[in-house]
Image 1 (cartoon, helix red, strand yellow):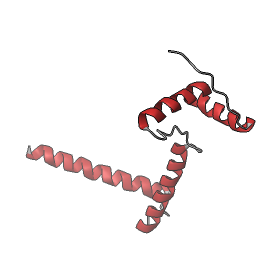
Image 2 (cartoon, one colour):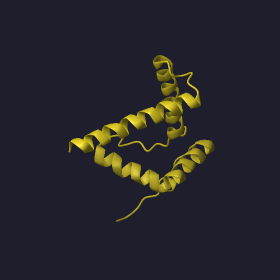
Image 3 (cartoon, one colour):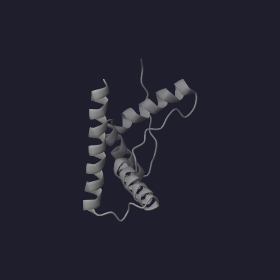
Length: 108
């Protein structure tokens, strides 16, 4: 298979940014351009997007979840509970579960 040399002009900053993204994806820029061209032919159009999140997805999701839990606690009236109250409630729930298990064991 013969090959052709392609040349085109691009802004230096854009090239540097694209190169950095490709490196984060584990490929070099020429490979990314070859992939793009092959997939363009297969799809008969713009084929795909390879993106990296602009922010740490997991941490932003966790922060949103914490805020949601805080709002739920306010609605339930549990937002102002002390650690001792929380621990007492947990202990009571565990004791109730243990009693249910003991009762179920006696019936079986």
